[in-house]
Amino acid sequence: MRVAFALTISIRRLSISLALAACASVAAAALYLAPLNSVTFANRIADYRMHADAFAHPGALLLPNVPSHSDPNDELALITIDEASIGNARAGLGTWPFPRSAYAKLLTRLANAGAKIAAFDIDFLEPSADPPQDLAFAQAARRIPTIIGYPVTTTSAGIPGAELPPPTLRQTMSLGFTSIDTPGGIVIGQPLRIGAAESLALSAVQHYRAAPIDLRTVPTLSGALLLLPFSVMGYVDTTHRIGAQAIDVGFVSQSMSFADALTAPLDQLRIFAKGKLVLVGATAQALPDFAPTVTGLYPGVFVHARLIDQLLSRTYIRPAPQWLDLALIFLLPLLLGAAYSQLRPPVAIALGIVAIVAYVEIAAALFDYRLYWLDLMHVSGAMLLASLAVIAYRVMTEAAERRFVTDLFGRHVSPEIVASILRTGDPKSALTLSGKLVKATIFYSDIRGFTAMTERMTPEAIYEQLNEYFDAMCRVIFKYGGYVDKFIGDCIMVAFSAPVQTPDDARKAVDAALDQQQIIGELGERWRAQGKEPFTVGMGINTGYVVMGNLGATSRMNYTVIGDAVNIAARLYNVALGGQIIISESTYGEVKNFFAVRELDPVVVKGKSAPLRTFEVLGRK
Image: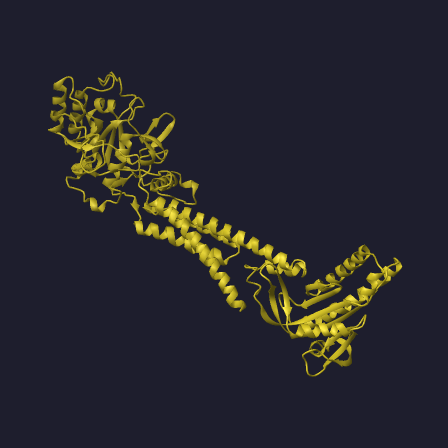
């Protein structure tokens, strides 16, 4: 029965813990599956932020020797329209925007220097006020394959909102859209295609390779190539400063300002550009071409350079399959919930912390070392939420159970026994409140002549003397592990031992009776000296099988013992004289080696056909 009760409690706790963990998983899964443009503070964009931030600052985690994934790309060169280029008289440049003859001159020089492809992250949306300027730009583009960017105003299929360059330029140049989505307020990547249109990065790389890229081999998120995060601080010779922030473009093998590209000796330009894909774009603070990333505002041309580098080097962030992320979102919290249901709260809390930290480290390491995007925020968030919910449930229920046990036994047994019950993982399951058949020793003690005494004493004096007596008796009972079942007027009923049984209950009961008789004698002497009336106590002890458990009405119950063995003990204390300890034959059989006794006349007990042998305890051997 006790095993079945404990099993029922364990199953109920496990079920509730799993239900709480499942609720945490459902909430995390809902955020994980949310559209990228909604709840951006908690959807997959937020998870990308978390991964990217750890990638840019690996020292925040316990990840040594994290690769930069930014090795210089010898196929890529960058020409920047920086502060030094705007108004550069030596290069013949005035204020922005530059005349298109400047770009024609740049293309001519790049062609002479052996550049393979030129790509412009610059909008050429309106015809030039001086038509020969467009013509010169277009003619120069015949000498070197050229891709120019243009914005799109929609990410739906097709490009109805495209703002295209003038026909003069489109006739000799290829196109690539430059628009970048910023769900959640940051750049996470760029679609490689929108309908039939190609991105600037895809178009430039396909022209550079002279072969199409199989987009099925490029991992994406919702059709977007994920941007590999930048890191702050990089190679000194390729670091460009925006304000006080150093930005790493170390993945670009060569970098040169627009003005230098127009004025540098051809031999120097040939070293810079020969055989390379040359990307041209603005970095000057005065030009509003900046993209928000997880590590700050970067020039938009740096974002396109990073995307081109990723396509050239095949360096991709690979999102885990959705089924795997969702499986982890549900499985790990459920495993934690199951573990929490069986462990004590301090151990469960420690386990939860270790599990969550370990998962965060594993997910971050996969991203930083292998560029594998395993969901971090929603899985760890579900684990944390499940941990808090289940541990809170355990703490609240166990606090209630502790109060229940303390209320039930706190005034009936020694504090050590209560503490022992409370130390168990499940205080209630340590008890069988519904009733169990156990072998126990029942001990009754009753004051002799108490009724006559009360006629000669005031009520206050009676209560004062009784309380002093009961207090002394209970200390002895608790010392030997007895359970004070009840006070019946001036009578005390005790069970050895409850609620937890020990093999030497009978000996403990007789030891307690002998100590009590000695203390009663000492109390009598003190009371006599104080002018109070002493009394004597008769005691009866019997050992046998009883039913032990919570008994009573639904509104009021008491943990007690019932059965024939209890009735026999009651009969023995009724025949005991003051100062006398009478034990039954069953008790005598268990204690005869420890105490001196003398056999008394048999006692007739109601319901028994034969008299019972009884013994008086004289003292310890």
